Length: 328
Image (cartoon, rainbow, N blue to C red; front, top):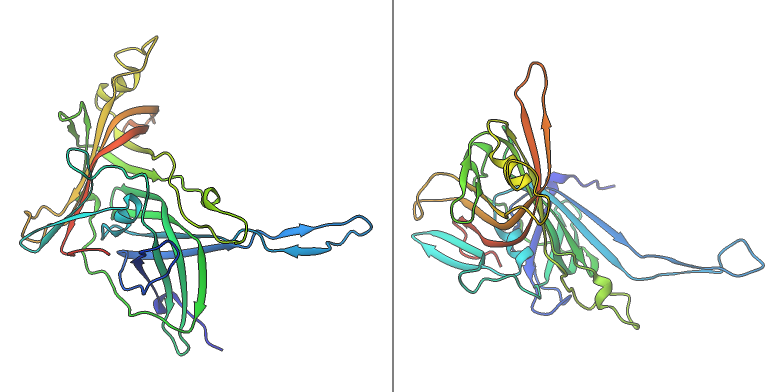
């Protein structure tokens, strides 16, 4: 009997030309620490009077979801989420722009689909190929004394088992750590750096529902339609002044009518190397943000901290810089 371990497994991806028409997977998604497929046949029980036992069990819609957890070392998951990337080279460094509202990289109404494979390289090879995959959600987080982490959910339209596997590709980009991360908040284009942030997160959701594009005659979804883009997150910082609390309240006291003025949030992580000399960088600017909640932790023998959750209407800039020419 052959057993399979994580050291024998690897994940590959490729962009599809037609939804759920699978292609050979040859690209990595960065450093992936865990992949968790969850497939469902949505069985429909058929019951009849006269018996407590089901008369039949019929397969319903096929649903697939792939959860990934890893370390930020590639912009590929962001390209999959936003459905686009404009790649520009500067002496071996490539800037992959996903969103730039001052140019042509705007939030798309339709996304691309991908083939994803899980590969087991052992005495007996096993490959599982998922077709019609779309990045439904993507989360990024950082905390003190850690590396930048990402997690996401891919929806899959179909799955195929085989004895064929791809060629392993391991990402070699150096991960970014907490000491290379910077958070700025404030009025758009006048954001101010926050120097005592303990943790930060961004959660992006495309809110895709494969049931939107289904029809009789097939158990498989025929496409993926993203709904409203949802941008949320939170951060914790040492309490040093009331600047952010005033943004939450809309002033020194809560506004009685209307809504507090919006703020902008910039998350920037980079290795400090100039562009063209081996720069690694993630830059995301969230605009028209509102602080949704404010909490403060006060203890007798500790530093006072305050925590904020936020929502944003949109992203004005999002890009990743590394030494990879193209992701797909």
